[in-house]
Amino acid sequence: MPKTRIKFSGIHSSLIARSSFLKNISDEIKSIPFRGIKNVSYLSVGNFAVQIINIVGFIYIARMLEAQNYGIYVTVGTFVGMFEFVLLEGLNKSVMREGSKDLTKMQAQLENNIGIRNALILAAIIICMISCLFVPYELQTKLYIILFSFQLGYTGLIGFLGTIFQATENMKYISIFGIFNRILFVGLSILFLYLGFGLMALFLISLFSNLFTLLLNFRISRKFIKFNLLAKIHVDMKILKPGIIFSLMNFVGFLTTRVDVLMISFLGTPTDVGVYGLAYRIAEQGVVLRNLIVTAFFPIFIKRFSAAKVQASRLIRLSVLIFIGIFLATFLASFIVKGLVVRVFGLQYEPSGRILEVLLFFLAFAWADMLFATAAQATHNEKYLLIIAAIMAVANVVLNYVFFLQFGLIGIAYSTLVVTFVGTMSEILVSYRVMKSQGHLV
Image 1 (cartoon, rainbow, N blue to C red):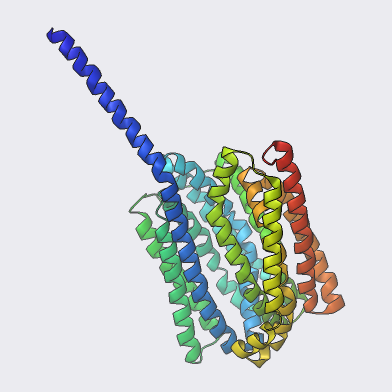
Image 2: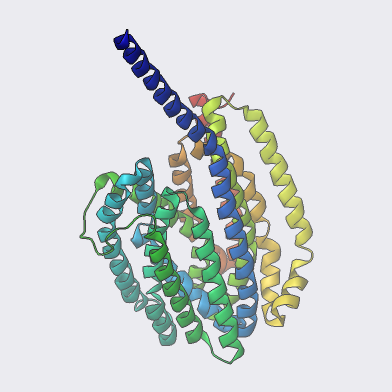
């Protein structure tokens, strides 16, 4: 009898432990949607706050520098930004994806990849410095580029440290540091420009703000995962191969957007860069909003396509409605933007207003493919988007050159409209056919 009681007691304890284990798993699964919404909220609110602060700084800096100096400022930032491709920032996604599977192995993932990250940062800085010697810029602009090339160190490390906050689901720190960095930069920029300082001060302030933010970021990240920042170079092909693909997608994105400003710096004058750069920066805010919406709805798309097939007619109908809505909004805005630009930024930016009247319409096409592009990524068909984007990037470079010679500065805006329209139609048609053949759409 005592043996039976002991046996029953053991089985009972086992059942209780198993029940408790299953309950913990169930609670964990139920909390996933809430955590996802919370993390997206942190990122969205943070990005929104950063954009507001950036707009304030953008208006003040553009007004104080005027078109020519603002053009030099944009040229330097864009030229240095081109070499972010050397950093292979796509490695961050690979590290985060592998490390998130088992946080106990996250330290090893970081130390296995920080060595190659540091080497890539050094290579990017050196290549940037050497490359600027061969472009048709004035000596002073080249000196600014050499100085600002150290910005690549911040770019390379801030995203790498961000993987810790992503993997441990502490997204709020990404937003907090983003807001802090922009407040520090914009606040000091306004102060020093008001005191009469110029471009050199802006570049130094940017480097200081980024270095200070990076140090704080590194210190806080060690509360969650500690790793050796100076670990030896270790090549992990499992991480490197997808990292190269992700990085290639980022570079293609550069060729279809920011390369416009870079080409103007080669073909035109610093004033041309300032005029077009201001118009593009304003129009770009519509793309930023689109990307925030995509970020928020991407997890929902993944779950929706995993659960069941989606009606193609519904996606098409919603895409058409989005296109019509954004097109009407940009059409109405085109009547007032010219006067608004002059009123906000000053008479020297009147040509920016004329360019913005045309450039705004590319937003309608950029928004129109939002649903199909998100659906394609949710169903692991991003490679088709990459192929289309690569073709459009090459077309954009060619058309920029041809249209600039034919129509002048506004020709770059025409090129953007043509490339965005063709790219959008191609992405929608290809995504539709591929997802239809795979059975994701009915």
